[in-house]
Length: 418
Ligand code: LLP
View 1 (cartoon, rainbow, N blue to C red):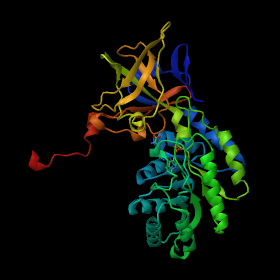
View 2: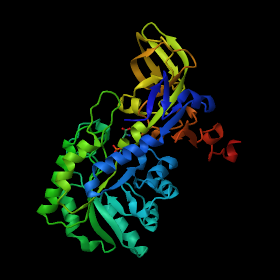
View 3: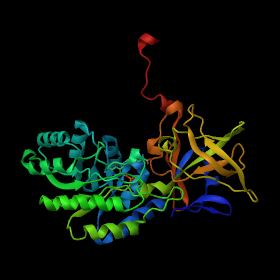
View 4: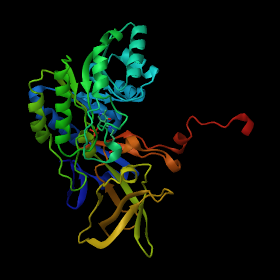
């Protein structure tokens, strides 16, 4: 469920008409619902209440500092993957003891900053990375917590680019290597090897690959008598973009809890999309309509630089008109909703049935709260859109739209070229 719905033919976020927001804020803009964000976080928290897990929101899905602050204020921790995300986490005022840091390529500087920050765990993805952490922790005279990321070699049903738990991906370590690491703890005196971590993929609709992975890890820990106190079971819960029928938080917990209940391990979850995905939309305006002998196109003021998911994963995002005028009906003619970027891959939706649209009409691209703004770019020198959040019947700009000046920030022309 989310807080974007039609009231009197007008799409509203919570109780505010998008039409009214668009009177004050130029399109395009991302729009987030605070209520939806927190509801989704609480759904998961409640479903897993009996084991009181730490829920670390995955910053990569939506890293706006207002989004992070909203979740942190409501008790969430954060899952980060870079020095930049650490910087954002700090601004959001998160308790360092609720931060976990994953990623296969942490650089020395990032490791050092994270150690100084004093976060809960590094999720470590290679032996070389572990050695680097040991080296830096020793120089800083600190002891740091580490969870080893295991690649459990399971096949989650999702797009290939976002399946991470298969053996052939770059993520985590195989059981044998993990065993070897736990057997050579003495090599890492400044490291507390206290946990294991998995993250098998993203937009996974059923609990069974999670169950398989968790079972594999628990059997492994038992078999080799590896004693740890934390198990991070990752993120990856799928959401509804169109006709998917994903597990609910409750349904997911029902399958997962029996596996974990007796393990005495402290459980960490690191969902991104489940919390942020349907908490945000992208609002755009029709710039032109155009008919060719083969197709009808609706050209809008967003493109693949603003939301890359359709182009990159052929992901489906529902596109709806913001105002449905009385008597307007959906035409039987299918249209492609495309952006202004000079690539054929620049589309938001293909073959969609929409009401007859004219220049200036507003459209909303749904389910854009996760991996929307965070994956946006300045391609074609397009300033990125604003981000706006509705909180308790008011809306706030939580990131201004970029300007042309922002586009060239940091660039310079060497004297020899002048
Ligand atoms: N933990 C780790 C270690 C991750 O790599 C990810 C996502 C998450 C947690 C959160 O996953 P989630 O709950 O959001 O599924 N750009 C793609 C998704 C890439 C996911 C990358 N890792 C998309 O737009 O679908």
